[in-house]
Image (cartoon, rainbow, N blue to C red; front, side):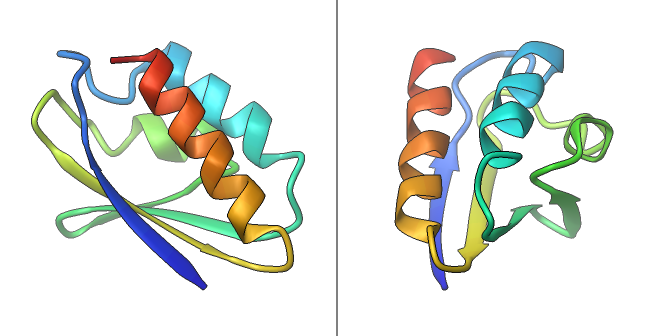
Amino acid sequence: MIERSFILKDEMGLHARPAAMLMVKMLHVSSSVEIICGDRRADGKDVMSIMAMNTVAGDEVTFRIDGPDEEAAMKDVESVLAADA
């Protein structure tokens, strides 16, 4: 299992576009993906779950990825969040 935290830069947080981009990338990995922000948790493979977190700029979100392709999955997360900065 690997875990990494990010500070969201986009003022709208993980809104529809980045949530959808994350979901699409995570659907291609076999690892489980959990997103944590404070006491809120989301399934990284469910766009509605991600958007329901109601994140905003400045929120710290932690991605917890567990499985055989966790390193590749985390690189995908990094690429989506970097594109959304």
